[in-house]
Amino acid sequence: MERPVKGAGRITRLALLTAIALTIFLAEAQLDPLTTAVPGVKLGLANIVTVYAVFVLGSGDALLVLSARIFLGAVFSGQMMTLIYSAAGGFLSWCVLCLLRKALTKKQIWLASPAAAIFHNTGQLLAAAAVLRSWAVMAYLPYLVLAALLAGLFTGIAAQALIRRLDRIRK
Image 1 (tube, rainbow, N blue to C red):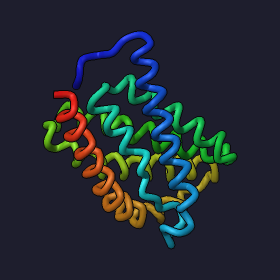
Image 2: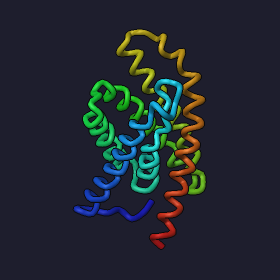
Image 3: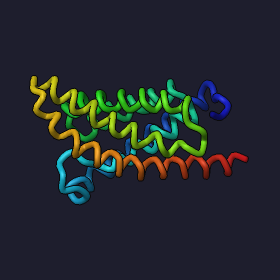
Image 4: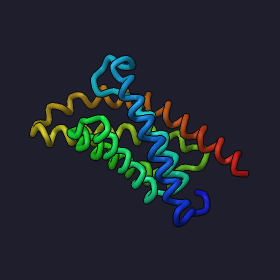
């Protein structure tokens, strides 16, 4: 973790990371019908920013960036119902990242993303089960776990590369 930035510098960094994550989220939402044949399966490229924030800035700042991205993503996409699903998945994913942050070395960060992706999908399905008052949606979990492993591996490797690159720039 790098030295904490305070005041206006911290606010600026968090705003910049939120803007980057939101831009990636909205761009990916536009490509979604083209990139997947399975409903609900996404690469989750904005999660690269979340992994970066947890491992570099810390859990508190990462939660601020994630929360802002989830809320603004729902507002800008015009799909406020997704707020429930995204918040449930995002919070579970963030919890897993925070736990893994303590267990993984700097060279193992890429492993955190697949686990976080699985819990993200699990959180979304739990929210759907609560909204629909039916556990039937959990039948979709095996497909989402497989998709989460693949997408999480991709985003994890990308986050690891980003952190490594930025570490070199700072030195």
